[in-house]
Image (cartoon, rainbow, N blue to C red; front, side, top):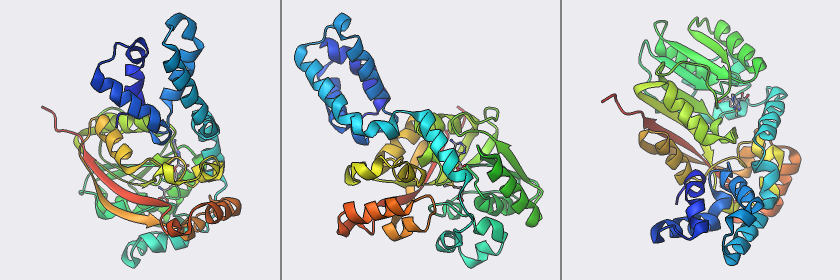
Length: 343
Ligand SMILES: C[S@@+](CC[C@H](N)C(=O)[O-])C[C@H]1O[C@@H](n2cnc3c(N)ncnc32)[C@H](O)[C@@H]1O
């Protein structure tokens, strides 16, 4: 399957009827599957633009009809998926207010030995979805970037492993989270944690400046995932490693009423990609060897551990998702990939 951005590139030729057979088939397939594509819906936006200008483009009537129909079908997704600024605001609001009640998440994901290294304040604010640190290569002296550090649990664990000659840059767009991470680092007597305010989509670091990027349950919150991957590729040194935990979901399988709930986006589910789309985006950003090292199903009960999910959304899930899928509404994956070494 091709991505939205690739489909957009083919769109003009497609409308003109000059696209070749193979590309036509790819665009057709894309049109029929656009809903569970990259989540950015660049394609839908482009369709609107084309349809608005259709008089000058003059595509065949049947093509126009089908494109209009596709756009119509995409409409129910638009409150969540079309307005990236709104998504960012809803994520900020949700995480700013998140209470420190998620020690159960930490105990699900980390061993007692790991948790013994982490101050209670960070354990109480664990909001990750898996434990990628078990798979990450962290060497003494490394510079690690933790994207979306939250309360700081992974930052603290990584900072123990880099040792004092290395450092962990803890990035988050919420100053509140950075304060929590800094406080947790101070309690853990770590002097190699550097909080950094910024966005995943525009990482305020120079090119080729970090050895490893980690992130836990954060990329799925961005409405611009391709941009996030491109930023990761930019700031990593050649040969650098990306090792992240994120939720994946077959969006076809989640009812629209759930996908369009803001709380479902804040809870990492509505913005999650299908696993192959996630890997595809990693590869498109220039990474090699992208693979899934671990998969962990997320049940409705697991979702209820995260305060981001309102009682209303949990009730909707129980009501609308067929009972045989209650144990697997999403799958947390650990994905690892590398930037190629410089030629
Ligand atoms: C699900 S929490 C995960 C926190 C932490 N990684 C953990 O495992 O506990 C998501 C975190 O990412 C931050 N975040 C979400 N979107 C972001 C963005 N676009 N740029 C920077 N930080 C973001 C939120 O403020 C929040 O702290």
